Image (tube, rainbow, N blue to C red; front, side):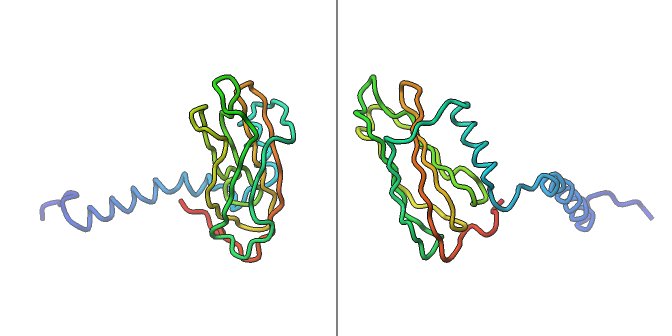
Length: 160
């Protein structure tokens, strides 16, 4: 009886299944925690700021203090800045301490933006602290912090 190679359907499916299982092995070993922690949030902030001091003020974070459903929470961040060629906001970063990822968003601006303001909707996993940090053209960092209470959590599972 002649020996069959991988040209059979069964052989192909067996090889494909083995390859899929082997490629998923590194993902299973390096799974991230289900939620960020204050430590991972602090690490993400250090990554953005490079360890530079962050001053309080100039940044306003508008987000409801009490959220009934964490699946779609409106958020607006604005920064006091003239937005001229010499004095403008380069970027706005928003961090949280309990979602699967500690960084909610990064927004990059130029003087042509006209005003330093971004708005979006975010998902919140639980009641937590939200921090908005702005990097200005002079290299300084400014921030504000807000506590948000979420009654119905979102982000309960990490999506791959």
